Each structure stands twice: as structure tokens, then as C-alpha cells.
Image (cartoon, rainbow, N blue to C red; front, side, top):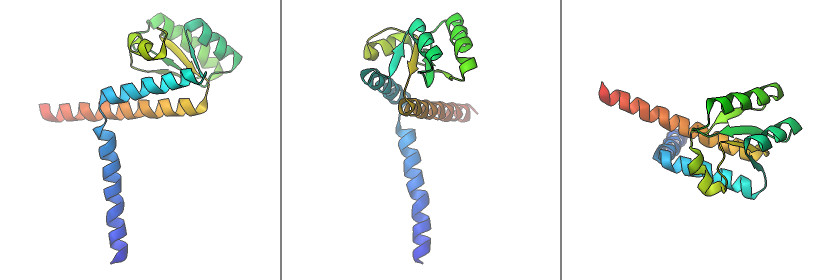
Length: 145
């Protein structure tokens, strides 16, 4: 009997954790991403601007490059061209430059993170945002049918 109670409790904890993720709105996730970028900047682990990022990538100091939603396709291609041979991921943030500028202190569409911890945190937040977006899209599709 005691074992059944333990097994019943585990899925309940899992459901609560899932509800916590679902409880986050897209705006809250976006704010958490911007806050993580701001913290990386304050820690001196964020590089902003195409030329500075290109230099840091070539020097091997960058773990990941993040691009703004409103970055030009040409700038996106150029950054991918620089990063691909060095196996540095170029990850779209889905956040406009102006939104990031308020927190980061500089308007830039290309940001580089030079710390593994910050890279993991940002990738985790972006995955959560992607799952939330997919869940909301699924709910919208179900409501239309």
C-alpha cells in the first residue's frame, strides 16, 4: 500500500512542474531571457555588435551567438558564415533589438555569450518559450476544429 502512494505522488509532482511551465506567459519568458542577457552583460560575459562578436568568435572566446528577431537577413548570413567553421551556434532570440536595448544598454542585433552557464540558461529559456509557443499553437488549432 505504501508503495502505491509513492507512485501516485510522483506523477502529481510532474503535473505541478508542467503547470508551472505552462503558467509562464510568453511575455514573462521574454523578460527572463532579457534579464539573463542583462546579467551576462553585468558579469562581463556578453559581447554586443557585429564587429565585436566576429572578433570574439574568431578568438575562440564565444560559446554561442544570439540574434535579434529584426536582424537583417544579410547580417544573419554573415554571422552564420563566421560561426559555422568554428562550430559556434547561432541562435535566434525572437526578441526585437529595441526590446533588448532597454535592458542591455546598447541597441544591437547580434550578441555573443562567452560563458557556458549563461549559454545553457538562455538555451533552456528559449526551449521553454518554444514549447509554450507550440502548446499555444496546438490549443489554437484545437479550438478552431
